Length: 509
Image (cartoon, rainbow, N blue to C red; front, side, top):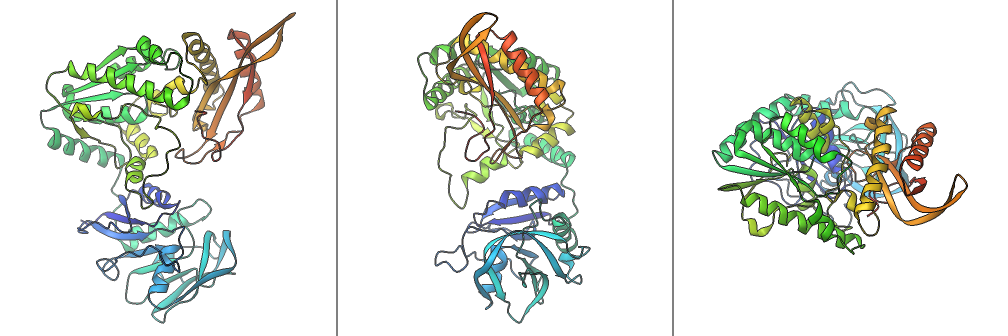
């Protein structure tokens, strides 16, 4: 049965969001660059064309070959996609005379069009385009308008081809989910059967077929991605999975012991390796962020490689790679410019010569959590905030020493524990404490102090690509600040980071 939705990417910032909205409706979809359409479309039930930063009028505008798709299966063009249809068939696409960015309301809806069925008069939509469709060809039927945009939607006669000038995938389009459901269910006839349980079942079958009786080694980080990958593999191949959990000395307070205990309670075949001294030694005298990352990464590879070689006849390396990483590698824009080395150190060393298995490489982060819940994994693992591979090594600005690690571990523990006590932990996407390379004057009792400053960071996000700082309650911040200064020797000042991403990254290094 045809159940896959193909999303063609033209470089829009919203492309991944389209995919996430489709999947929220329990329909499987894949993103492919507009110029790399799969050869076989046997499983494809419909196609969505994304928006684009390009104009269809540009000489180098991305133009896909839709000869196998258009008129042969349901097709939805969003923004740039709609303009592409109009222009290619003789319509008129010109620069907008007025700004068409932000909220608008549909003043006309053709409800005979199945794409717009059950949508409400005046419903709010989100516009984001520099060009507009001024005229449509004769074989196009107008389906939607706003006060300023006459051609907000259309359908091509005798085809299941639709175009819309607004973005149904964004939150501000109030009935965007309804429109997508209409397309996926009523037009493409998808059964909405792609659920966590169905994913788990099919993945276990696939892993057993792929791996057979081979041995697999997996480096666990304590994070949700590697943990869910481990549980899926464990269900598929049992004790042929060998997990290695390395303590680099840069984890949160008691984290190595607590997470290792959780892993063993989950029935995983896991070995804990305390390599603290190796990592701290590798970081001695290093303050530059990228050099710290490389030192931590190299130390991890050495430890992991040593431990992996203690297991006889290992064939596979398992990794918790998720779909955004895959999309990035095949992006229509090419790999993005490197801002910093990736947070998650410990990729496959070339010299290990192992085959790679990635059971989560078709999932987004929120989907990984859904799978984890369906697997009944502990919430301490599933709901854990993202934590960088280099750990506290990149939250200690400047040189990393035993004493500075201890200070930050205690600060972080107070910060996170109070966040849980106040019921804030699950409302924040990521929280971190940062030890700054500066000291400030303070007064404790009758004594003048000159001690460390720590910064607290908390953000709200969906995928980490953008983030807003979290407006944590004043009473919470007051209690945390007082507790840190009173209980952590060496700290006399606490500040709160209120910068968003962009321009500031979530981590400080």
